[in-house]
Image 1 (tube, one colour):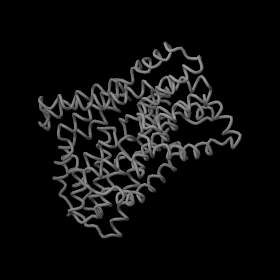
Image 2: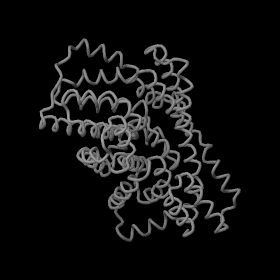
Image 3: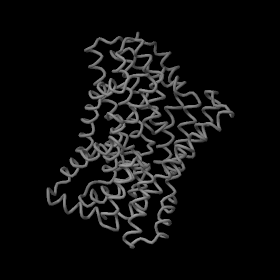
Image 4: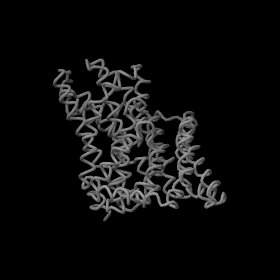
Length: 425
């Protein structure tokens, strides 16, 4: 075990890619201990990719890229602005709503931040919003991407922990709504204090017209969750259906998805999903070593010696994951911590769906934690804002998100109500 951990930490310290660190520490363990034949290492690595639900990852990524390339963003943003723009701070509220809807298309925080931020941040600045407030709000609202289904982190956690992906999708709905509502309340008070402007009230007919143009985006989560809950298709099959749906909508409804653009979309989706799949493959031997050396059992013994309370364990998990999420991307962090934390949570009687929501929400917040959050870098890239300035502005909405994290952590009903109601979880 010392060789295993030393190799993993050493490879990370020399800036090796996380994929190399995962595979390298497992190889070092196999060579040093003799408990793991090299053939087993290879079989375990490739076996990690044989899970059928993993096929949903490249398909959902492709569907999101097709919708984005098809021109959904302008109509989605216009609908959100017409619906909420007349309220004080309405542009900020519209940004949050647009991020929530786009989250149901892309399932990724960075994609949500870039797609919505390119349109809404300049609009907020033009209307008189402080540019750092606009950028910070967009960063935080983009965290809805991996929480509102379909969610790539939920798929990774579900495959790694052996939890139903459909139940995880349902479990993320209410926490996502709570996070969006909390950010809207925060934005309303900021806008009131700073006297940000509001748009004139829009005639109902215009809102209906805008809703019609945004209908394909609004219908996609209904298609996904409706199909899963009705038993028509599995989450993986739902991903395939959304690819076809996104292609048809982009080509025939918005008429902006052209055949000449398909190679670019396919290449981008292939590269994005390829990185995630390679990461999952390399995480399998890592998880095997963790299980063989009974690391979760050792940690259970240690934690229960401190306190047998599952609430204390969740408190420690939140602190640990926030620290882990600062330097590490969400996907690699999930595949590293899940084999350790999921068995401990199960031993303490914590619902696996609830645990998955807590893990994913924690790590998603790492994407906006200075100084290395990926969403921060993305928004700095599209706005030209200095990272230190955005880093200062992000703390207020970040603490709002931490409050939501605490609520989700200690009110498990938010994560388990819909899975129990609709899927008999």
